[in-house]
Length: 67
Image (tube, rainbow, N blue to C red; front, side, top):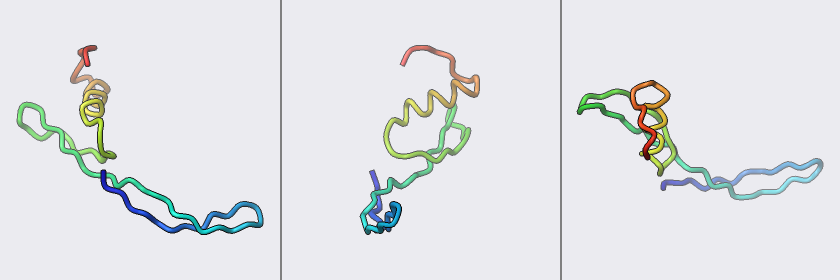
């Protein structure tokens, strides 16, 4: 998983604090069906199988209930 660390200013009522925040970098994922490009989605790392199944289920391409 690729991340960036940013220094940010947190403002809470009249207080101001400098803190570090960690952001996960999104990455493109190309989905192929029968070795043909179908779509490219941006996603955070991990759980690619679940993401692809959910997308294909929503697009009415994949309807198996087995994971």
